[in-house]
Length: 479
Image (cartoon, rainbow, N blue to C red; front, side, top):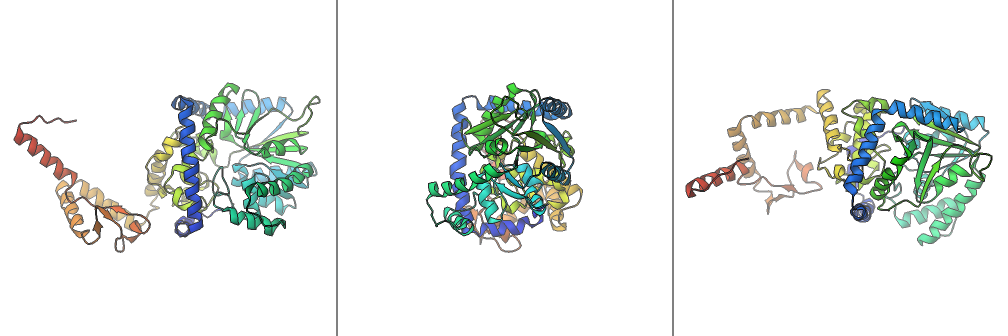
């Protein structure tokens, strides 16, 4: 497993100094954020849909065992096969065994975060298989030897010029920065691989327990080509992707596509219900669905199961002030942004990802953007509590918070401390802001301004207001 979560601080500092990355992140924010706002507003009943989507996910996760068994039984009745993988290693081994069983040489892959999670590409390549990503963004970063930096826009960190140079170097084509020409270059290359592949691998956006169907949502059609042309289709599905009924799907599609890309509906929504039948014109000879646990059952406790509601839309990344400044690679694993700061420690262990729960301002923008209303700040606070309980915080941090807690219990001393801070900041304060602080506080203002301590604290102003109203005979309202 490629894991660099412990290097978050170093990665973040490097990202903040990367001018090209900062330009790419600005484009991301300027593009996705207003599109999502406009799309959700155009729905007219966005809040009702979000509430209903949350209810559907809550029901599915609360009865996960029942719905997974129902899905598996129905799919097997239709001629598909279901495999249960406890962890990434077992999932990889299942897929490699299927490749050997069917005599596979070439593999094409639709976009899938689950396969990124289990590091499938590297494993299959080590086994001697030719593996090609077919989503354009995933194809670009595969050529570059990198990992995705965003859940739905994996190559968002790359400029047009970088991609043009990559195509020129790796594919031997004339250098061009003309986007339609670049797209055609990728299309021509990928089309031949689709026609020659023996196995197609995709993820699963939704799995419908009632019908045994899996649902793929794409904008390029690569999921449909990967699942239709090769004779073997393997779908890798995180177990939380289940929804109870076919009637639930329109709600989930509306909140997913509008939140992810600001579209009413994605270009391709594909429902696959079993392998090819005798009367079908196309489709795979065999369909195998690998249902992945990989730590998910540990999240089923009441206080953490909400994390399993995630639709992988990426909306929380786009509005997060941390992600907007450091990008996805800083997080060191597959899932970046607020959902990554929650999921990664829960899936790989808090000891291996202790920095991530702290990578948040707790501003709540992620909760407001989430299509299923996941309370990400609450989950982050839960993880921070666990960090403190297991003493995975520095002695200096523990000392500072102990001092703060003590001061809060002694109002008079707290008031004196505020006055002292207001006096000590005088050389550094300008128009109510601290733009540069000396060590050991310099880190707070290295990349942002810090609000200065008020020279007249709220408590003082409140007392003055009460005295003024008392002197004027006015009525004082409390509450």
